[in-house]
Length: 564
Image 1 (tube, rainbow, N blue to C red):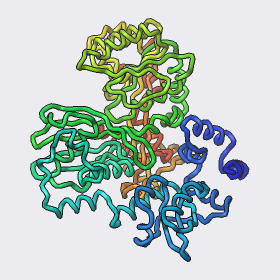
Image 2 (cartoon, rainbow, N blue to C red; image 1 turned 45 degrees about the vertical axis):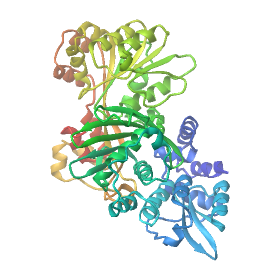
Image 3 (cartoon, one colour; image 1 turned 135 degrees about the horizontal axis):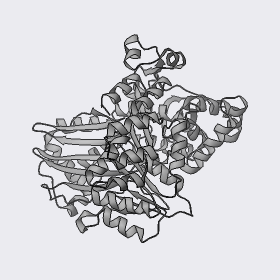
Image 4 (cartoon, helix red, strand yellow; image 1 turned 135 degrees about the vertical axis):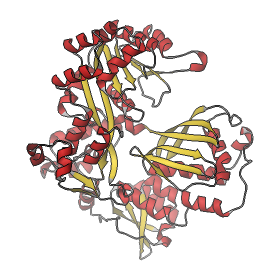
C-alpha cells in the first residue's frame, strides 16, 4: 500500500525515480522505512509525507503546532506509552479518543491504545517530529512526571540525601521508582528527546549545574539542589558499573539504556573536582553512524575524491578536527562502505564508541599495557586489509601506523589539529621522519560541524552590505545564492537552528606536496600550495553551504574566528 503513494510522488514529479531508488537503498541499509529515508535525504518534508498518507488512506491530517490539548485528554495515555509509540491523544469525541499518529495504519499500536484506555480509537495523521514536540510540550508541562516537576518535588522536601552512598549491593536492590532513580532516568530521557549529544552535571560551592549540549551548544537546565549530588553520582556509578566508594580518582564507564523505543549507549566520565564529582555522559546514538558517505555533507568534487581515496589498496588517510567534530562518524561511514565479505577490517579504539557488525574491534586497555602501538603489532599478524587506529597520540603509534601502510595496508586514523596542512607538521613534530610522512600519507581531511537553520521556522533573507563585504561574496554568487536563517520556534527551542552538517577541507597528496613534506616546509607553505591545486578551506566550504541555505553566515563567521 505504501508503494502506491510513493509511485504517485514519482508520477507527480515531487521526487525522481533516482531519488526513490537512493531512498530505498538507504532504507535497506539503515533498517528504516522508505518514507523516513526520503525525509532524511531532504527530498521531501515529513509534513508532505503525512498529508499524502492521510489523503491516500482517508485519514485526517492535523497540525499539532498550535493545538492546545486538554489535560484530561493527555492523562488518558501515560507519557512512557506516548513516547515509545510516538502518539499523542488530542480530543474526546462521542466517547471515542482521537489520537495523532505518524503511521495511522499501525494496527498493533491502535489495539494497544484501545485496550489501555478502554475506548475506541480514531487515528489521525501528523508528522513524527511534530508528535514528539507536542509530547514534550504537553507532558512536560502537565502534572505527569518531568524533570522540572521532580526537581520541584526535591526542592520542596526537606529530606537530606547527602549520605545516600550505600554499598552497591544495597543500592542495586533499591526500587526503580526511588526518587533519585526516577530523576536520573528523566534527565537522560529529556536529554535524548532534546537531541543532546552530552549531559554535563557539574558541582559548585552552592549548587549543581546541569547542562545539555545540543547542536554543539551547551544549554543550562533547571539545577537540582546541592544535597542531591552524592545520590546522583552514586546512581550513575551503579548504572555504569563503577566503584561507588572511589571519589578521589577519575573513572570511566558505560551505560546501556532504552528511551523512546530506541537503544542508546552512554559513555560516562567522572572527574573529582574541588566541590565534588563532575559527571559527563556522552550520548551515543547508533543511527548517527549509519548516515552513509553521501549524506555527510560533501560537495560533489570532495565526494568523488573521498570515494577514490578510501578504495586505494594502501596508505594512510587522516581525519582531523577537535573533539565533537564528527571524525568518528566520517570514519565509520567509510568503514561501512568498505565492509564487504572480501575485506578484513580491524580497529583499535579508545574506547570503542559504536559496535560495527562484521568488523573486528579492539579496545585499548592502558591498565594492562594494551596501547595503540601494541594492538597494531598484533593486528598485523591477523592479515587485515583495512586498519583503523582511533587516534595517533605519539611517535610510536604514528610509526606503527606508517609501517602498516607501507606494507600494503589501508590505514585510517585521527589527529587533533586545526586544519589539514597542520597535520603534516604535527607528525614531524612528534618525531616521525619527514620521508616516512611524505611516502605514507595519501590524504588528510579536516572537518567541523556547523548548525543548520530550523526547517520549521527558516526564512530566506538578503544579507546587508557589511556581511557580503566581510565574506567577500561576489555579485555573481549573490545572484545565485539562497541565504536562510531561523526565526526561532518550539521545534528548535527558539534557537533558529536544528541539526548540524559537516564542512570539510580535503587535502590530497601529490608529488609537489610530498616534496615539501620531505623538506619539512611550514604548514602555511603547504597550505598555499594545496590551495593552488584546488583545495577548498573549511571556511570556503562552509560559505558555499551558506550560499545554498544549508547553514548561516553567522555560523561561517564563528568557524572563521575559531568558534567551532
